[in-house]
Length: 101
Image 1 (spheres, rainbow, N blue to C red):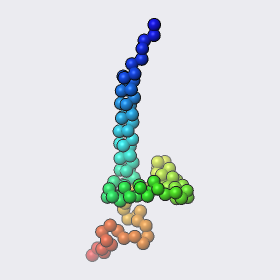
Image 2 (image 1 turned 180 degrees about the vertical axis):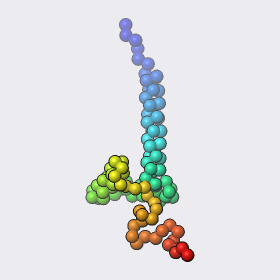
Image 3 (image 1 turned 90 degrees about the horizontal axis):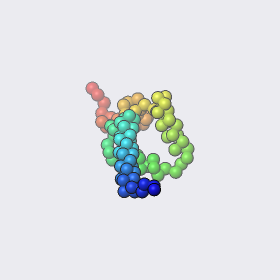
Image 4 (image 1 turned 120 degrees about the vertical axis):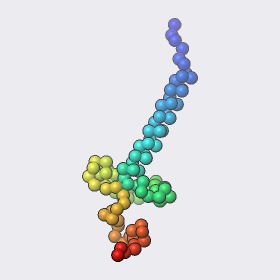
């Protein structure tokens, strides 16, 4: 005769696996934030940027972001955020643009 399946233990194993996958995803997102230099941003700014990115419908914009991200993961540019070299022209530094003496 065939041994009956233990559904409770199988469900518990699946729940444990799902929890481990969620924890891994959160950890990897944190590592990505750190690797890109976005950890230097305030949480409000980072959240706003992510919300904007999630709601953008323009395919050309998304394709540009995809190319930049792919280049980052391939190590071909996509330098971490922050620092004077990544500052767009016409923007002020975070210290308000005060000139040093």
